[in-house]
Length: 297
Length: 297
DNA sequence: ACCTGAACACCGTTCAAGT
DNA sequence: ACCTGAACACCGTTCAAGT
Image (cartoon, rainbow over all chains, first blue to last red; front, side):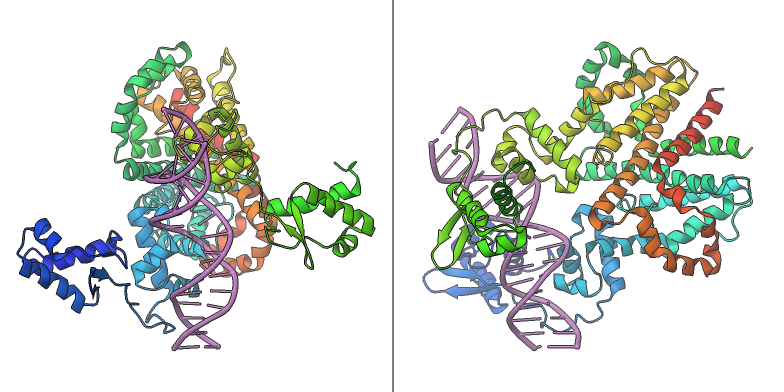
């Protein structure tokens, strides 16, 4: 890029401003004089940059005004199906967007742009945004199979199932907020996860009700903590502040609150322990499984 | 309300349709003939209902067309501060909207409409929507104080703290998705909750790290299950289908999946147990506290 | 100086116009 | 018949114009 000749670099920079929306169709592009000032080049170079963009159809000269930004030409012929656009590609693009920038960034327009199609073309492959998200969940769950045959020990099984979900939520921070265990979508990979856990618990004296509650509450704990961890990822992305920095910025207001009698007990909390999600996961899982062990005994 | 005379009830009903957006400025209001059919009243009553709305400025007669819905008159003079609009009133209105229609319905425009102000007036009292939601959390947490002095038994304390949060999330289904225990806002009522729990656990041999993890993982379980319950509320509101009805509609596809080998273990789950959130709460809490009891022993 | 309406840059999705 | 761009009815928030 830096090896490009100056007129090319200037042309690309102007093009980038148009792509970014800083310059919009109908606006005046920088004049040759402005270009010479801004980039420190000769008039000949500035003129060549503009005529290049003219030849490429990006700008058009208007007598007595200057170079005007043209409306973008449609990238593809209309009413022709985008070649190779499939439900799987839409879902993959959705996963890529959500992994990179979170669920809030997952707009239909953004996914379509990622695929180089019109927004409405997506609706030929998914019914609506909700169905897209559901399909995304199903697809990523298939990334996390559980071993066959399972470990013999029920505790090893439950630890493995919980750990597998925990890691999956870590790879896809948007996932935790989106899965449901009370209205599970009919996604084979998710049902397989649940079925694997049921098999580990079956025939150990739990009532059918307790078996159901065990499966749901364990998943709920893992999901709940994964939601907190994901919020942390989002907060860092949004504010640029890590949890440590956030606490540091609150420290003075916090210690002030500690003086006021009833809140002084908060001084017994350790902030580093609240930021270590791995240790929180291990602790909460251990308490739950120890409680279950007492029930099974 | 039901004691109002018929013409008043009809006029109110038409007004309600306008407020709901079913009838928009420029639309024709129901004619006298339509009113006699729809409400089963005499022409004189229908005419009185329409002339009442005319006198109130809601409708205006257009010769040869009928009664036309008028644009709403601005409720208050501009650039005059809305009398009595305070941060507390904004927060209260936000809570009312979110309680009634969920967090998705909590738009700045909706809250402003509820208060009869312009949207931008809200920004004089809260910095942005996020701060509004944070203030809402703080306010409702103050609804759920914990008793002083606390019970002597640590287990009774933790059960009470968990139960209090659980009930609070039940009264305000939007709350669970919004609270954070890793970046807690400096809200006295929330900090008091945490401090109360810390006091119950202090001096029982837990390390500072484990004490911190205990407080967070217990809250995480309660919050996680409350999120599931809230999603259930939202799903019923959106689809009009209870969890039972949802499962019934899935039954055939579900039992089909059960036949395919590995998933047959799912038949051991009891759907009614998955829908009983109170029992799920009690089960999960008991497992966690039994696990903690083993650690403290 | 204080307040807020118009405007902007986004959404998801409907629907009719295009091929 | 199939496909999709324009349009609609929403967002949160900026900013400049109003009082």
